[in-house]
Length: 254
Image 1 (cartoon, one colour):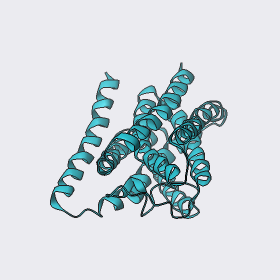
Image 2 (image 1 turned 90 degrees about the horizontal axis):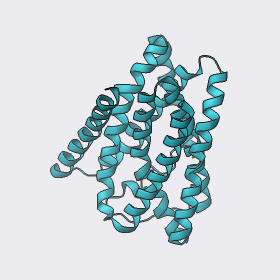
Image 3 (image 1 turned 90 degrees about the vertical axis):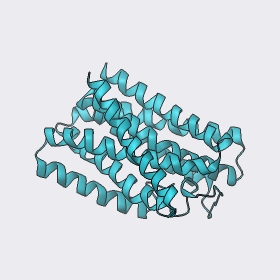
Image 4 (image 1 turned 180 degrees about the vertical axis):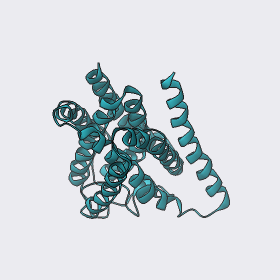
């Protein structure tokens, strides 16, 4: 049953994020993307602090869990510096461009697809770790990952179009890349059960990933808009993101 949940969450989550991202990139006004980013920040922080971190503290000592989260944030910083992790949330990334202009900046479509495939694979492993702890935690984690994947996938889609890919080819390649989360989920399910004590560590990494993406990658993009109405909108949407996780946690926990 746990494996079925992992497969469903990885597959549906990946296809949903790519499909919605394509819809946004092709039909929705580009100025709406920052609104989606604000919501994603709230969902990530809500999932990290309301669900993942409490479970990590329950499964391991407070010092061990805190050290894992701290180490995870540090590792993600290094990986991002090496352009191996969150390739889409750069300073001038399309997902953060309030004007919606595409800037290839010399990044090829191949690099985007390779980076996104690795990213999706790791997300699948993290989803597996969450479901091995509990179904509720797995669902909350999957929701948070999808919430931040959508604005990232919008950026990826726009970069591929800007790099010369047709709309059909960009969508097909993004869908194929999303299947890496399914592979990561299945491998994670079997590998984590074979490695005793790995789940609490992975939960710490899940929390670190969510916090890092929200605080280091997404929030700086919001600070480009200093107008009062933009700040109020961002604050409300972040609160809605946190609230949606709290609501999902309440409903699933019933």
